[in-house]
Image (cartoon, rainbow, N blue to C red; front, side, top):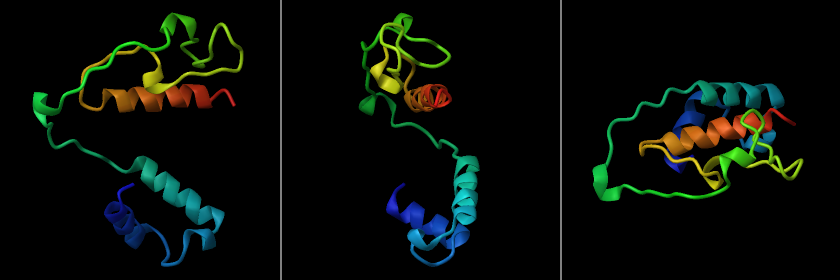
Length: 107
């Protein structure tokens, strides 16, 4: 997280002491709060800063439910390493989180 945002969140959600001194219940509560924190996009920068990428691991070679390689058992691919193209505006983040969640559920 950006430093200023982390400091502001800590002011409201965490005791004023080093993280290494926080117990597990406090850390779990902070993780739950961060996971549920609403983020609302306020706009875009338009085509001036737009980016496009193509290529990567063929999705036909990866299980859609576990993100595991069909050729190499135990090897998982997530995010932009896969050949998935979408609109700009955070979709690559959503794909990274969703594919990471799918792969992480295997553990």
